[in-house]
Length: 421
Image 1: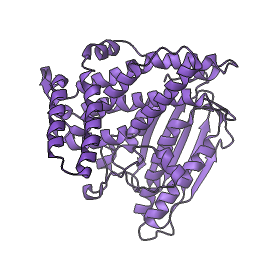
Image 2: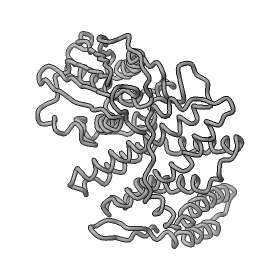
Image 3: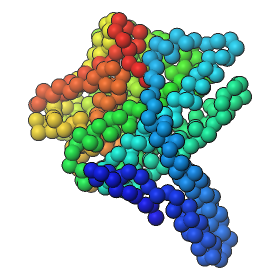
Image 4: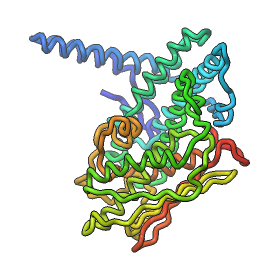
């Protein structure tokens, strides 16, 4: 049903969505004629509603020119310091200012993502899972572009509800990307194409989610927080939170878990955004624990500790995670930052709903468990996030002993210029 137009260099330049609506309508009529029971009628009604929604999203939005026009604009990225010191005004004008910025900015960023999806190699663009992501972005662009100017607090409240709806609608996008690229990557030999697309898409998504969540959080009054920025973040406390979570996963999988010792600047506190740390830290800790347990299967109740060291200075802060899990073999060392690379057997690679690829925070709140092995997205995504935040993620392997991972992140109010969201 979906019409694709192959362009130059084997890329797909556009889709003939205009033919989709009549096809969907025909399918709906056909389904109605076949409906002979109340159950069938109910299914038809649901199908018709979904079809109508999709038809509206795609047919009205080809109006391709609006996306193209937005994609030509540069995004306006804010420093966390700007967000932190914008402050709160007694009359609520800071909320209107923030909402108006997002109303202009989010459609531009979403248009960039739509354009990047369309620039994928043709064979990847045909993948149904990636098409689903593309459609999610089109719908988001449509809803945000059609929203009325934000003139008062009532309209701003409506905009907040739309933001929350879009955050919920897009919570599984990373999972969909992982699945779609796993299904289609065998057709693409150039790892750089995949890495460049996923790095940009995942970090752009993180930026948009941080901005939207920040605006929603400005309505809350939490001690030591301005929006999503914690004014007195303790690296030790956030590490401890995710150590507890990773140990529960490890105990569920192996019956035991390594102890974790935290040393260094354990009393450090400074302004920072917890959200990206809530993705990166559990990934790194899970990897360290799994390596430790897998390399001590003969003595699962006598395993070496994992040591986490915090170093803080006036430019950045560093978190080093050291395990005694045997290290990463030489043949794998250059591949561990590649998307989808995993040492787990393919027969055991499952992608449970709402895993680490989806929303880790929801999992820790619900106490849900998930496998100790990932889907080959954890390390490369953590690397991309750390670089987006003006830092780095470096792996040092001592083959035969263990692995040290260095997460370096720039302060948002340090001596050097901060990153932009």
